[in-house]
Image 1: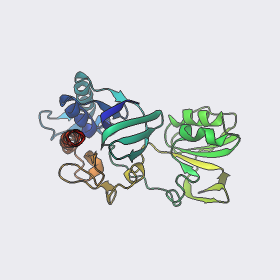
Image 2: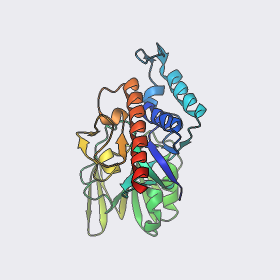
Image 3: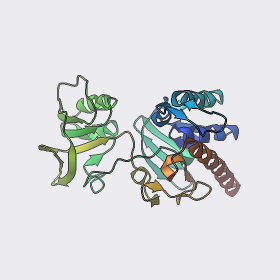
Image 4: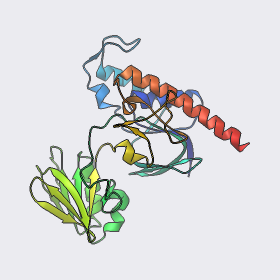
Length: 290
């Protein structure tokens, strides 16, 4: 498996700036996220305080960011990250589309306001999962529940349904799909809590309680404390120092995920610092090996 120098999670201002800076320093980069950049940027009306881009519309700024990255040879790998594990001298990155390795990681995934359901963290890995395609093989002839937050998750439901006996699909978005067969779609249902006992998972909602062999929660973002085991948090944010370093050696964070102010220029600046810190870390690794 190819091992990248730096893996960057997130394609907002922080992630793109980190990727550009890493490219300038001649490092191999794996940039994971959406090719459309950040909705927070593209949907903004007018930005007044970004140096060199006065009175710029959000969609124009997003295009400028992506064009700059593309001109530097930065490529975006569209994939959703499920987990990042420190393996000592490298990191293993588990994604929906496959697994990757990198010598260092920069988390620039933005801020998520979603809170875990009661029971979610307690039963994570024991009846609760974040990737239906990853665990589909375990559900042959079984029943599963999918809590979905995007139309993109319908493909995962179909993949899981090819193996499972039955799939309950509970969209938390405006559903306009055509899932059928052994997929039972119920709209307007709000999950409340999760329990797991005697080999069965239970999802309580504002209506009925669903029972299955497992529950898949397909959020667009995963809370950083769930994404990286052992990561030190500062409330809902990743705790970092002035070099954007976390408590895990070789892992850095930048942008909104590190805290206020939630400003594009602050995010880009932190992306630059995080990339430079990752480059210095790689130099330390190389020196230690010689």
